[in-house]
Length: 266
Ligand code: BEZ
Image (cartoon, rainbow, N blue to C red; front, top):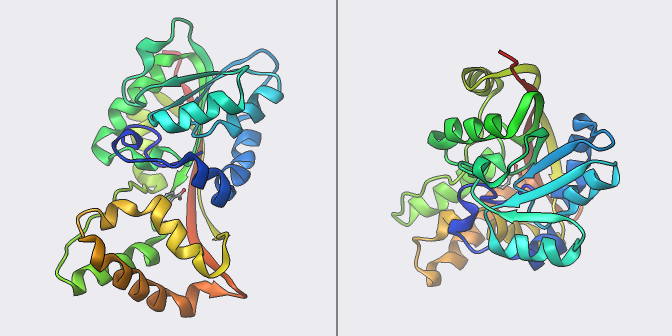
């Protein structure tokens, strides 16, 4: 799912599994392409890291793998268990989950989740993934890449600054040049890494931007008094409307970082 702090931090905020499934289905729909990149094989043991409500976990299982979903949000895990009672879902932190499993995995998969783990914690996360994989096992992932939704973040920051609030982005969106060395440092060989634009139409017409902010960018506004938030959202909409509202829909300037890596055998 890629979903919000699906890893380390998703447990630090409230995740609405209902809103996620109802209004943001594009996250797991686009994730099907990452499953293609994973190319799961019959009988392989796969971990879906940051599985959210479990839709891609199920897709991977339907392709014949034996898959476990893991997420830091208790609400997401509860929903995943209800939706897919035949699958195993584990509530754990992506930075320290390796002790949860006795058998090594053939592959670790992650869609739209890793950017919720703070930049400083990615070495711990990668060490956890490496330890969970057999030598030669794959780590295949997509996350937001450098510049992802930056115009949206800039509009929110500027609306908050105009009212005297200095707010920080909750996300980590690395470049290829930044992330590939981190993978190598933690014992992976990088076989493929790419950054690309994927403008993404949001659901719910006029309300789409507000809904998106409520689901994915709520941390920006956490420290702002509730009575000031509406004005901030009005400002953000007006700032962004000219460039990002087309034919009745908001289009988010998503940029994706995708990679295929393998746990080194040495
Ligand atoms: C993303 O999947 O790119 C994303 C998710 C949440 C916030 C911002 C971007």
